[in-house]
Image (cartoon, rainbow, N blue to C red; front, top):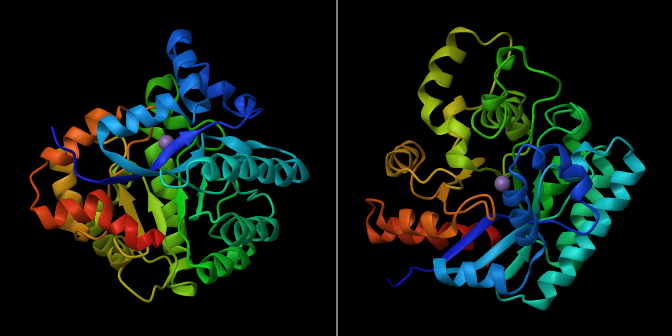
Length: 320
Ligand code: MN
């Protein structure tokens, strides 16, 4: 099958020494599968490139697999390790710049340090933005303490990929049901809620050119836009926004198809937000590049839409 050009950007690696942060998560996976995942996360050569070639993926923006430094309790260590990780990634990108780009790891424990590291990686290392694994030890990024970070991100004109991780502390609703607490369901709820905290917290009113990327077909948010408007109008709880909630979803918040290879969900997301808000990605190595590629090539879209979703929107967003 001939492949349409694709760009993907929820594609993960792991830097040397970062395995310890992922241990609790990897422990849930069958050991043989975990060994295979770890081999793929560590590889920047034949395995990764062959997988990309077979799926027709021309270019990927790579990010450290979760949770990374987001779970580091010591702020100084998080700052140092994020920097190490970014220098490691920059060397890998420099080894194959026509196929690889980089997303920064950021020490969100310290908003000023995170902004400084973002600026360094964008200006000196040519990174395309950052990928952050949700809250940092229970702190979300809608508070005023993060305004200097958002201000810098907007000035640098790069997006933040808000990637899932576990909710902070045990969520009572999942008690007795670990199978729905993580990637199957809980991560999506957690990440969508974080994005809504940014939206209803007025971050996009304060920084209207900010772009937040959500994976997994927008973690469900595209499908609830109508209800956000309808219920927020009735229950504003003292909050005011410059626009209807739905208007931020598809403009400031854009999405990827990573890990949701469903034509119906894709059609719904495009119908809700328009063809410029939806972008292809895989979530390598946790998801199959060939399944994702077949899905996006066969989904019922016209050619113009397919080109936007597969590469055109990403080219615009990342100035490729
Ligand atoms: Mn992922």
